[in-house]
Length: 99
Image 1: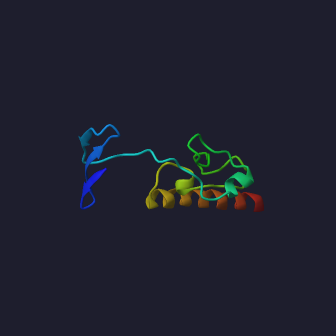
Image 2 (image 1 turned 180 degrees about the horizontal axis):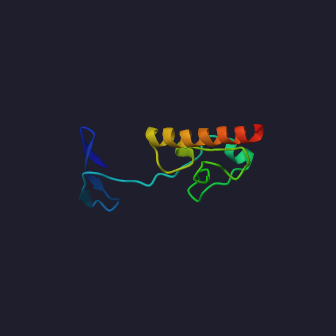
Image 3 (image 1 turned 120 degrees about the vertical axis):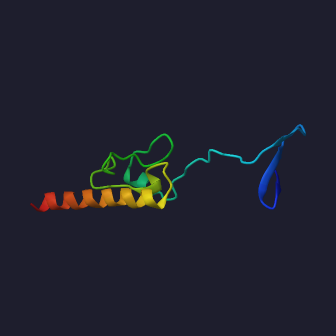
């Protein structure tokens, strides 16, 4: 890769051919940074995220997941939103147990 002040300009292939570029995209594989979901037995998606239902429940009773460990959406706003859903559902389950 050839750049000017950190801005990509060209890519050079093994055979010496070059191609002018302004941007380069890569599909970086996702990897859980914790063994806890696997140790608990949480089911993972093909991409390696913790599989959840629309209420952020996993396949393990009482275990919820939210944020970028359970989705390809990597943003603070998504993590906050799914965290809010998970928290609400956890609260509901606790209230259901008590009453």
